[in-house]
Picture 1: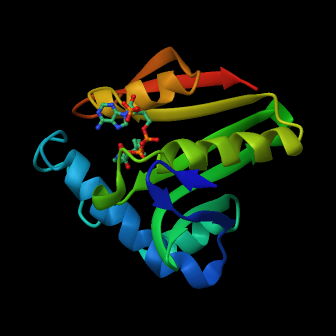
Picture 2: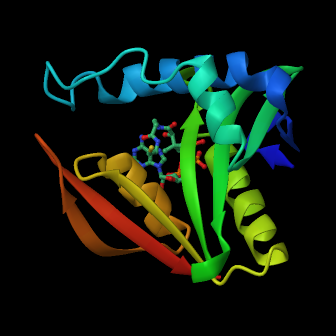
Length: 161
Ligand SMILES: CC(C)(COP(=O)(O)OP(=O)(O)OC[C@H]1O[C@@H](n2cnc3c(N)ncnc32)[C@H](O)[C@@H]1OP(=O)(O)O)[C@@H](O)C(=O)NCCC(=O)NCCS
């Protein structure tokens, strides 16, 4: 799989990748949300290696590598009873954004969800993260609801697959 103007590949991540995955998520989250999430609510780092490892027990993580370095991540949490795949931890390192890497990761997640027999993808993102909402809309997701948080509103998005 190729991102625009960049050579890389996607692979399923293992426990040995937890550190690098946490690093990409934390860099990307800081860059994107430090001026969006109100002070006092903003968390940096947003995730630890151990939390990634914990999530790996329930979710499949995929990573995008460029020259052996992890620069993007996305996770799929299957909920078989509902036929839904929840998409989590979609993050591309700030230096590698807008080159199609996020799109490539989402396509792999969708392909995998179909393979697992899931019929819908679902995700939650920050209501003011216009870039993320735009990104998911371009991939066919639609806003299906809102979730009130302590100091902002999250957007619930879904896509039939
Ligand atoms: C959202 C994110 C994963 C997208 O990854 P990416 O590799 O940059 O995305 P792509 O290059 O595949 O972009 C595909 C399309 O999404 C939209 N998009 C992506 N980033 C955008 C931005 N910053 N502003 C506006 N639109 C954007 C564009 O329509 C883009 O197509 P274009 O470049 O041809 O205009 C990445 O910006 C990111 O990691 N952001 C910070 C973390 C985050 O908000 N994650 C999602 C919610 S948890």
